[in-house]
Amino acid sequence: MFGWKEVFVGPSKENFEHVKQNLDKGEIEYRVKVKGGNSQVQKDSLGEQPVSGSYYYIYVKKQDEEHAKQISK
Image (cartoon, rainbow, N blue to C red; front, top):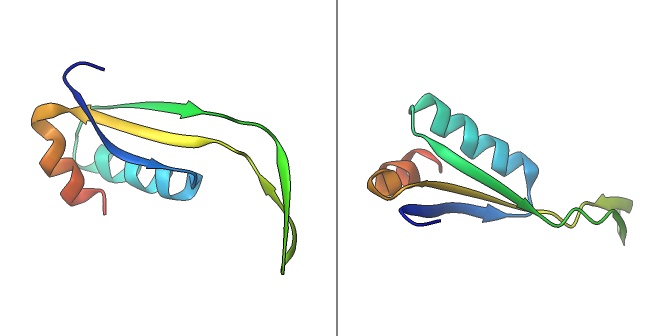
C-alpha cells in the first residue's frame, strides 16, 4: 500500500482490536488486512485450544505513523 505504513501485525485478535480502538480514539485513519484463517486445534497443557491461523495487519497513513505507534501500545 503506497503511502501507508504497517503499525501492527500479529496473530492475536485481542491485540488487533485493542490497537484499532486506540486508533479510533486518536481519530487516526487506518486500513486492516487479515491473512490466513485456517481452522486448526492446538494441544497444550490447558487442553485443546482453537488456532485460527490468521494474522492481522493494521496500516496508517505515512504522516500518522509515529503518532499511531505511540497511542497503539
